[in-house]
Image 1 (cartoon, rainbow, N blue to C red):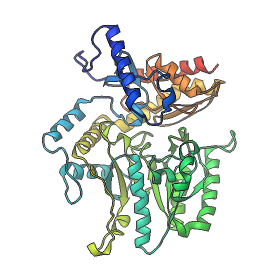
Image 2: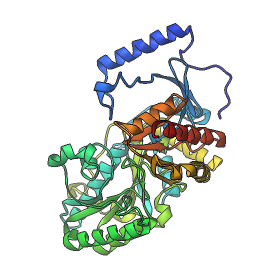
Image 3: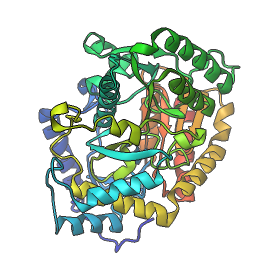
Image 4: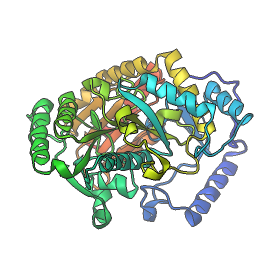
Length: 457
């Protein structure tokens, strides 16, 4: 927990009736002007939304004064808890020097330092950093890099390969290499051209091992490459965990095999580590579990510890050199955005990586994951639970459906007990900040376990 002087920065003072009146007013105003992401607005008010007022450590507090343990790291981005003084100070210090300037034709120290720090931690062979704004925009950049690199080497490869149940963001290129029908099917007619293979995280038979399943999918991938490799620019994977697909874990042999097949057939491997990177799997990068280096690695979410939007594509030197030439050669990567390498976001990211190094956050993530695994073991034998899946802190508990929105009902039950988690369908997701204390892990897992037993009987 973070030390506090007992004073909270929010506006939750006043009588209980005053607080409730303010909350109701804010919710009404929200409903009249806003459109929330991944939210069916027709049930927004009926679901009794929370209005967050302030946060500290592992908790956030609503405008009614209720405090909640942040069990999903504010959508998988928070690393050290809310309002860490070290990151706050780094942003304020940077604000006193430079708020923002374009990265097109200019550079600045925070952007340089952060790139150095990212590459120092990255799998060997990744030598260049291209900044983007969020996870989807990093994936978009990686897709374009792969295509253009092939084109500039004399090969036109308009297709991409990807994995069923994958998720890589919500812009059209990222959606094209996604594989979740609920999210993506509507847009198929306007997407890039792709080939999809089965998910290594979805077992063909409950008795099948994940190693066997990985072998089956690699066989499928080899057959695809044999027939179509000359037209495929890249294979896009989420190494070790397909996060938004329902925390679908797979064996490291799939990642190694994918790397080997891409090498054999001359196809670039894009490892999307927006969700799995920055320590979430108990390693700094999920690719480390398999001991491979992708051609392109995308990262985001936890890169700034949840403070500001920033993402990046890490690339090999060979890929980078495919873009070098005279200005007239048109080999430039014509891609970017106004806020590329924003100095405030870069300063937050540097402070985040400094804290991770000082506090051993990656090792702590492994410890937290192991503790979560032990505490959730009893659920494996509960009839209302289909499967508990976990690698590092990334945990999904798939519950039996007992009606409409069962996963949501479990999360609402946990909310009533002071713990905030979110579902992916009927998979209840737990992904706490890496710095969470043991007693808070016990609170998280115990509360969610109780909520499951209450809802799924």
